[in-house]
Image (cartoon, helix red, strand yellow):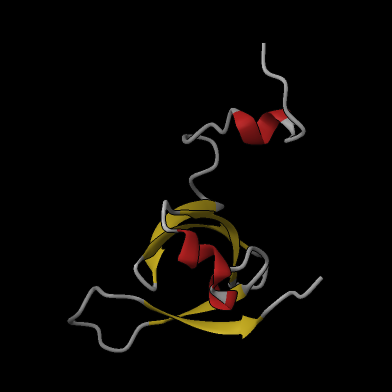
Length: 88
């Protein structure tokens, strides 16, 4: 039995069914879970870190909208640009 305020579908996240909308990447040296938006952008859904200082970085705040930028075709490395930062 799970007692949590988090919705049940988020607690027991199925990796197979959500692979097209969510992905885990490294951003500024920290692992984050990104959710794909309808307009080909991504939003930070969750920060996964044991470093307390990572949670104070405004660019890693959940709700921050990112866009992918691929500099060159020969390098598989993807860079991210912050588009919008939700402030609540």
